Amino acid sequence: MINTVNNLTIYNSFNFKNKTGQILSQQIPEVRKDDSQQVPVPTLVAYMLQNKPLVKHGVTVMFSIPVEALERKYQDFAKHDIDELRMRASKSGQVLNWIDFLPQEQLKRLDKIYEIADRMKQNGGQKLGIIGIGGSKHTIENLLSLNDKKDDVVFLSAVDPKSIDAFVKKLGDLNFANILVASKSGTTLEPSVGYEYVEKVFVNKFKNDFLKQGLSQEDALKKAEQETAKHFVCITDKDETKSKLRRIANEKGYQCGIIHDDCGGRFGAFDDHSLVSLAYSGMKKEDMKKMLEAASAAQKTFLSKNLNINLAMQRAIFNTDCVLNGKNNQYDYYFGDSFEGTKLWNTQMKKESHKSSYKVSGDLIGPEFLHNSTESDLDKDNTTSFYTFNTLKNNDTQEYKAYNALIKGSYKAYSSQHPVSIIELNDLSPESIGEYIELKHFETIYTGMLLRTAKGEKHPQILPEVLQPNVSIYKNEVKQILKD
Image (tube, rainbow, N blue to C red; front, side, top):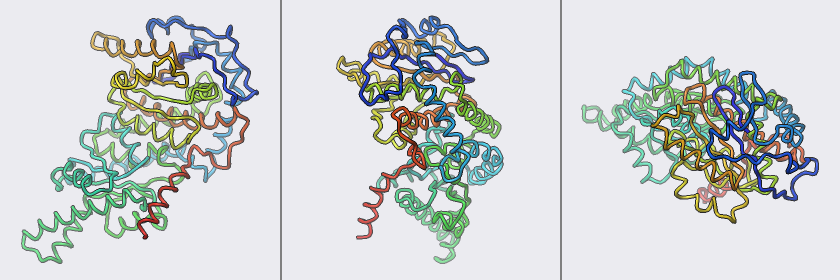
């Protein structure tokens, strides 16, 4: 199945070795063997040419099995879940504010985003240290990596002094370094420990500088705290009654950005922590505007019940069909170092959203994965895995000969044994990146929803895909130990 919408192309190989598990709902008609096409794939290009487009309206959609078979199995469930998500996205308290609201709101706030970044850069604007964990970190890593803006950024999520000292060392001259602290509540242990430690380093450094200038201990400390305030930005809840970090920032005169309500860390890719980091790292305002506009447009497409253009639901159908047919180990492989941050963010999003519905076995960068995973991936007894290859479109010139050969050869080898899909970005333009982020967002939500619906289960009051209740288990244990 090959589908293209704007800047994204998806190839799906549905040549499953049928192993229908008992969990498959009896409501889903099976696809008969004579309904399927076993497509030989000598190369990816040949694979594409062997399929005829079923839809032409600015979008190309191709399948390796008849589209009727997929629709017969899942269209009612899929359209039900699309309606359900539309309805929930318009309500408060559903942790779905990242749909429609967030990209539109951030388009209105672009001047504020760049004002925060520009004020930080008045210090010299060299290294940016980002203190955060989970979605507050991985969403930034992903966007910086895809936009090739990661060179001047250093991350901290560790709490041990050795790691924090190494982080500070990477910042270089603190006179020209800045710190962004991202935490919705401001009480999460890891960023709180890191922030307090690093802030003391800055204050002590500037205090010693002022003491050398002949100031008293009291005056040197006061001026050091004022100077430190110029180097720190806090991205947190806008309400200081809900955020300890906001209260601290207001007291000390730090600049502040917003983590918006009901967005959820891993789904808040376009919240202030990511956008300020991109602005600081050199992304042009007009490019950020294009990225957000593309994300907003993609969301509308991914809320469409026209399954020919809703690539996110197609991806969810692929995932769901794999899992319900006993394929419980999922892998995302990325061809290119530009996806280095994506693998971290996508792994978190799938694991936190889908819990134990299936095993997220690994997100790896290629071609490295070919030398550390293929031996087990292609073992004849490996019958429970499915794969997604994330790739970049290119002009197929001599320079890309090895790259394309790796993709085509890997696809041929893997799809002969496993269900495989390919997501191809047209390029790494702001528009493509905006669409890609939303594809991953909606695919994650729809996969969880469709797995429930296909098994006849009802959706709970709040979708489990946007919650992470199990995280509190370890947090409570840590808090108790710290109290003792």
